[in-house]
Length: 340
Image (cartoon, rainbow, N blue to C red; front, side, top):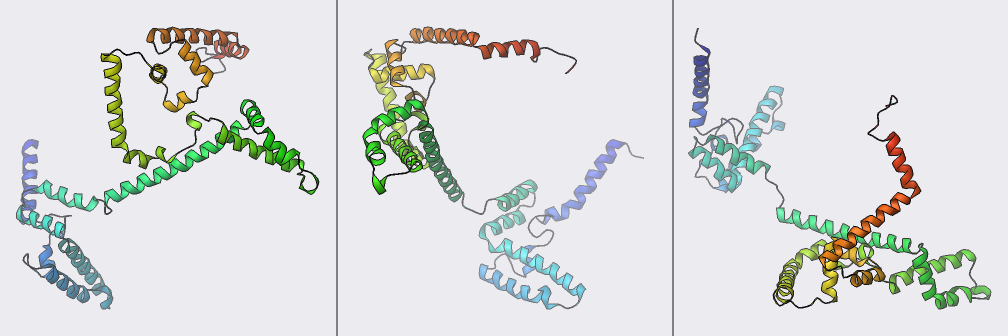
């Protein structure tokens, strides 16, 4: 009885001896035509042209087609031969696949490389990746554009219900409402339901056309679409680099005083807000930021500290927050009861 170590060496040697003939021939089980040579299956040589390979395939396909045989055994054998012929033809009709197969025959020792080349080609996408990218970007852009319009319409309808915007719109459109709704007489007089509907239309129209809707609720434009952003990206990048160079030259090197736009930019950066989010601030609030000189880092830190303290005081005086704290103290996650 051999020791386990020698038994493993003996088993490995036997496996290698069994695999050696097929490896030496360049034929691997599970790859291409398996243990058969694809050229031999079609009865052609490696020097045969693509036309000769196609002709040999058609002749053998007609000969071994399962429908041409009557008995069950003959059909099974013909089906087996037909699949082998079809597989060989699929490999040899394609120039790239045929090149890989010839490489395997010429380099039988590159065992793992053959598996990689074979399965890389089989799992490679059949559709051009560029087409997939274009279609994907187009779908995203269309969804982005229409979702932006839906969000905008929802925001306008919401603003029409907010007293602040609604009263302002009614004041702006007072003459138009009197002309189209209240001053009608006789047969042209509208019912109460129609009057209400007409007033709502006028309010929405005024909010859209004459009131400045900013921030994330702003009207979407074609420039916001992903496709357009990708196309103009070189221009956007060049503009951004030029802006930074000018900023460094004017305010870091030359020490020039900040203008209004530069002050607002610094305030927005301190607040860590996006452009749309900052634009949604009221004009009165923005003027207050400028009055407090929040573009200066020290002033902004002091203002933020005061705002946080003020918020804490309001929350401490809020009855709902007091109730919430009382509940968390008595029934919060830090307290365990038998009911748990």
